[in-house]
Length: 217
Image 1 (cartoon, rainbow, N blue to C red):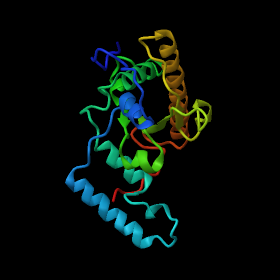
Image 2: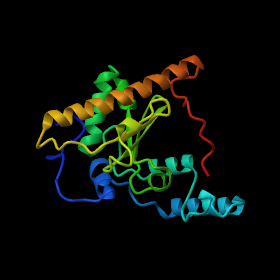
Image 3: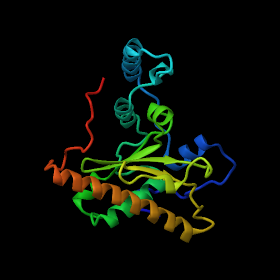
């Protein structure tokens, strides 16, 4: 059992859809507050006014740009502290990442954060089920049950985008589960270190992001 999650079980095996699996593994984001729904609606209307092509992505109901969807998702978290997600897989991932970064049980550990995007526009329109951030770096995650569509091998460390395959059930094969978590944590650490190196080369402060986020709404 990881230090971040106090629940008794990792999995409850049953037949489920991809959306159900994402929710079980990463947790589902909370519904938007009325205020945020209205702000997102206003943004979407502005985008519709600017869209000149019928096939523009902004023609899709509810579509908003990536960075706006990202900020909304962060405000929809089902737990209070993104460093302590109330799901076993995110907790195991953060523990493994912290160990590989040599920040476990240090103040920097608290800067390692997990956000679920399941059920948000970030998931629906931008193919991101969850993300991990640390010191201005960001790794996006997309979990899949369809190995024909995409697999972990399609991940891109330079883009900071990881595809997570279906996880082994720890109750049936703990070793296989641990190896999978270690593999994903290693990829995320490589992406984080690459972004940290980029920040250092650009002489950016620790709290600065390597991503150019436009102003929110």
